[in-house]
Image (cartoon, rainbow, N blue to C red; front, side):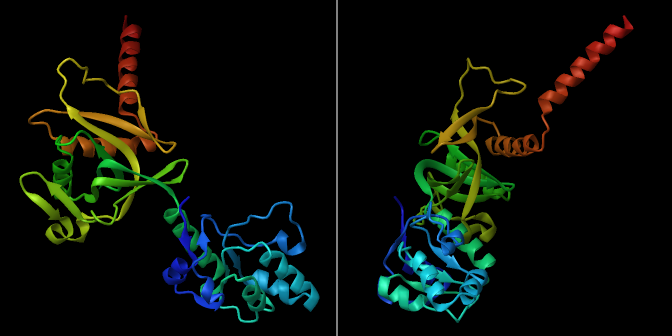
Length: 310
């Protein structure tokens, strides 16, 4: 299972360490933070252990309204489950017995000046991406008009060259050769680079290019949500290539189904243009429009009109 250390989030979000300075190497494996609520009132049918615990204004104010003995009990309810760390938001200062308990139980106690809502949103997004299940696939990832596309095909088929053409038309490279796919949810797949190949594009007979140095920042994008899986293949003379609308096929990546299109290559074909058309057509389909359905309606209407005239 993937994990990060408490120290990673301390550095990432510039958090103040109030206790447990020597425990920052503790591991975080859960991708969602937790704000204790029912746990403060002894309701422990299920405690989400392993999550980063966040205490905001509401939680701290609640503790302040309790007697010393009650507040010690409520704080102890959380601390005894040894969360990887506890983070106090909104720069709360009157922390009751929290620093003492965290020191005794060797739990890092951290603080941020940001509001609870703002900080939890940022931290959850960071943990979701960082701890997401991921795989690496051979291919090229591009963003075409805001739509993430994974280009696949056998070595030498022309994936990188096609990506270069797309960059020349104003689109963006995300990753070449090795694409890292991250599963953010059952419906969301994120494509990104592996750091080593960031901004690089390899072209046969030309060599390695840094697209940012050559074409500027607009030529590169750190990550993109994958909407289409496009496979480039050699032309097959006996295959049917003039369907009005191909039945949607899918490729499965870690349980996320991505619409799959196959584009056959032939000298003279504008492959980059076909990819642009596929991306724009996918967008229209998401809006509920189908060119094939509209065409068939026109044909049916024409037949109906012909029948009435007869």
